Image 1 (spheres, rainbow, N blue to C red):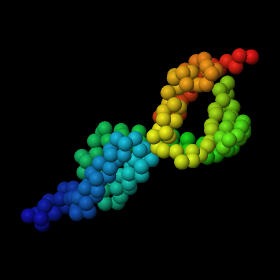
Image 2: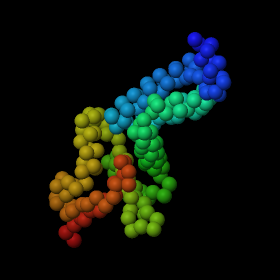
Image 3: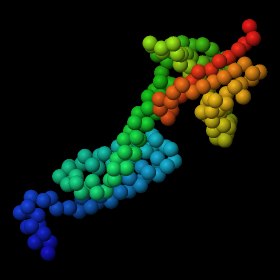
Image 4: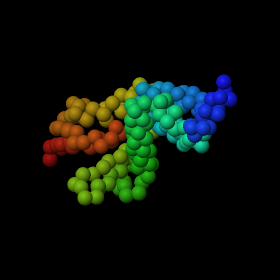
Length: 189
């Protein structure tokens, strides 16, 4: 039976699935499950590593000849998720680079272990502000609360001390990791 299939495949120039193709399909299925797991946990950088592995499998020489065999393994929705992971991970990497890089930033304050920088955005009246500090002996629950504050821009006037902040509005959310907002403060001067 195998020899007749091989002969038939050779006659029609149809590549036959090899053992390595079956191994790659199983590896691909496993990687897709792992990608979906990380996406479900909102761990975009970990998901990106898996997407890169998936792309290596798809670009490997053994599957180039039978790429249509792999199309049945990856759905259109999974391809869409892979593209979103690539886009979001690129945004996250850029944000991490920007936060670690002081080029173009002006030091505004360095007090009590809190460093504040700002920069003017070219062609815009907006300024970008970044802060840096190290939380000694903080628990993850406290860190999550702090991050939640920055994600709840509309509530900033409620918790800002002495009612100094009058209002705040989200102007844009260019990515999952970036928010542009405006706030109004009154110092009673």
